[in-house]
Amino acid sequence: MLSDATNLTVRQQDILQGVLSSFVETNEPIGSKTLAKKYVRNLSSATIRNELAELTELGFLCQPYTSAGRVPTDKAYRFYVNQVKKLPALSEIEVERIRIGYGETRSLGLEGLLEQTSKLLSSLTQQASLVLIPNLSRTVLSQIRIVRLRPNLAHVILVTKNGRTQNRSIEMEEDLSQEFLDRMSRYLNEEYKDLTLQEVRRRISLQMLEHKKEFDILYRESLKLSKKAFLESPEETDEFYIWGTHHIFDQPEFQTDVEKMRMLFEAFQEKEKLVEILDRFVEAKGISVSIGPETEVEAMNDCAFVMKTYSDGSRNLGTLAIVGPKRMRYPRIMALVDMTASTLSRFIAAESSS
Image 1 (cartoon, rainbow, N blue to C red):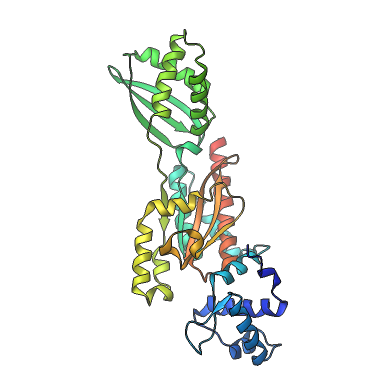
Image 2 (image 1 turned 180 degrees about the vertical axis):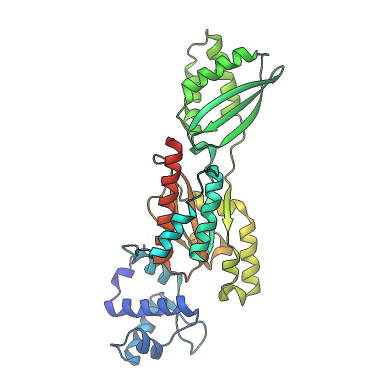
């Protein structure tokens, strides 16, 4: 949060709000006469001009070219977002669209539900949407099963409470029978069920350090296989659903600048950078907004992310986000993201408990 934003006078805040409102609507600079006519009617053009100069000096506004009106800077957008103390109520139509959007998702499974969320959020906001799929390491295990494929090779099946599965082939030091692997599966389910993969890994590491029960063949072989399945497997990579990127490319600030559009298009192709932005906020509380350079992705300097995590009722699973131009209507977008994330969390929690 900007330390000097709170030092603005009420008059300066009113003028800055007028510049922001105008630019969000028109994407055009605004001058003192228009501000006096449409946004700050109690002040003269001369007074507004003086305040515009002061706000420019403070870094909240800039002039695209000489004799032009002013446009907001990143500092102004941050001020705008920080001023949102209470999210506006959604319209009845928006609430109904969210209800209908989730009305037929029970048979889709978790990933179908997340894909539907991405489509719904993009449609509601007319912006691009991203929904981070839960990394397996953050989800709770509900079942572990081990199947013998051939001598010295087993297949480990991990099932999470929200319905995701992951299969891993494990080379075994000894050729264990399916009967023994079934016993091992029951043991591992008792040991690790209802833990996240992160918690499983921590427990296995501690057990390996303690070296307890080494005389028990079931424990010893289970620990060996667990080490291969959970500690030596490659790290899971995050995935996400993305929908509605054309909404950004339709914005005038990108349509008129081919180089800016090219860079933005390439940024949308770089999955790792987008995941990094979303993953950064997966433990955040409430709505998070990342504006321009705050995303730490140069090609996204003219964009903003509005994000909120979703959960299964007890743990954060992932992040959903709206990506749009910096001049978006933040309060409304924040309210839509908030409502959608809360609704998604309720559906996942209900599915996990059923």
